[in-house]
Each structure stands twice: as C-alpha cells, then as structure tokens.
Amino acid sequence: MDFTTAQLIAISAIFVWSGFVRAGLGFGGAALALPLLLMVVDQPLFFLPIVATHLLFFSSITTGLSIKNLDRAFLRQSLSWMIIPKLVGVIGLLSLPNEWMVLIIYAITGFYAITWILKWEIRSQSPWVDRLLLILGGYFSGVSLIGAPLIIAVAVRKVAIESYRDTLFALWFILVVIKMSAFAIAGVDLQWQWSLMLLAPTAIGHLLGLKFHQQMLKRDPKIVRQWIGSGLLAIICIALLQ
Image 1 (cartoon, rainbow, N blue to C red):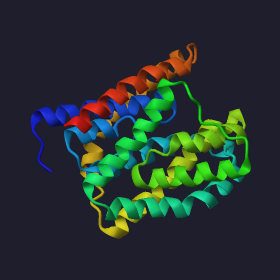
Image 2: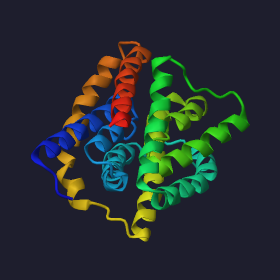
Image 3: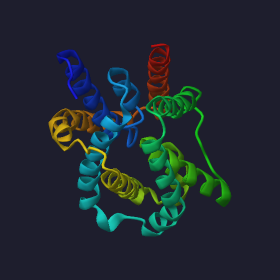
C-alpha cells in the first residue's frame, strides 16, 4: 500500500502507542491501536497481521524467559473452549465485507471503553459463565485480536498471581499463532516487511510502557483505564462520523 508522509508518521506514532499500552497495561495493544489505525486506512486485514507479528515477538520474549512459570492446566482448559470460536472469528474476518469488520471492531472496542469509563469490571463466579466468556473472548480474538478483557475476567480467578502474566502471554502467543496460520492458509499477505519496519517504534513504546507500568502500580488502575476509555470512545465516535 502507498502512504503519504503524514500517514506514515501517524502509523508509526500509533505503533509506539500500541507497544506502550501492551507493556503498560498487560493487554490492549490491539484494542487501543486498531481504532486509530483504521482512521488512517480502513483496512483491518492490512494491520492485523502486523499487530499479530509484534505480539508474537514480544510475548515470545516474555514467555521464553519464564516458561517454567506457566499454569499449563489453565492453558489446556481455556484453549479447549476457545479454539473453535477463534477459528469461526477468523473465518468471519476473511469473509465478511470490510465495512462490516470495521464496524465490528469499533463496536467491541467501544464496549470495552464504556466498561472502563464506568469502572465496571467483567467478573465471573460460575463455571458456565467462565466458559461463555472464554468462547466470546476466543471469537473476538479471532475476528479482531481484542478478546483479552473477557479472557482476563476468567484468568484473574483461576491463575495464581505469580504465574498470571506469563500464562497470559503464553495464551496470547498460542492464539496469535492460530490466527497467523489461518491467514497464511487463506493467502492473506502477512506484511512481513511492514512488521519489521514498524518493530522499532513498537519497541520504543514497549520500553516506555514498562516504565509506565512501574508507576501505574502506585496508582489506581481503574482511574488510568477510565481516562484511556474516555479518549478511546471519543476516537471511535469521530471515526464513525467520518
């Protein structure tokens, strides 16, 4: 794709933001970056492989250093409920009209933004609710890479705190491998060159996010997410008006 200089600057800045929120919040690299990227160019299948490749790179570094610290039982259980809806979501991404996918991505992201603004946490106290959240999280992950909040609602109760972050990174890695494999089988351009070009700004954001995470531990994370949710909802409204 051909971009203007202004578009390239905007895309690079958004990928800095993507790396920042992924490292700073532990998730959200796709959820908080895709609405912005789609305002530059409304082509989800162009940006999703790039975001997925970056997630693979950074999650593999984290998981590789802590592979002994994984909750393998949770990984097996959660994946057994997520794989099929994950594939259904990927099929939808590849088959639905581009305009529909853009609206679906905005709708899912807007839902998360509203929950953060209202300080409403998605929680589960029932095995059947857990399974429903995993199914929906798998589908959202397949269709847009933004199913993390639903999956986290289950993981936060079932995974010990010392294994929590590393187990989630391993789970993201597996889910993204499934998605990238489906892309390759379907003949989708995986945008390797763009992924390499945008790795540097994403890494800058990642380093800044690590520092921000240390500061956020001293603050109320609900307040931080409330501000992010407000900005994200405003961006979605502007994009939909356009």
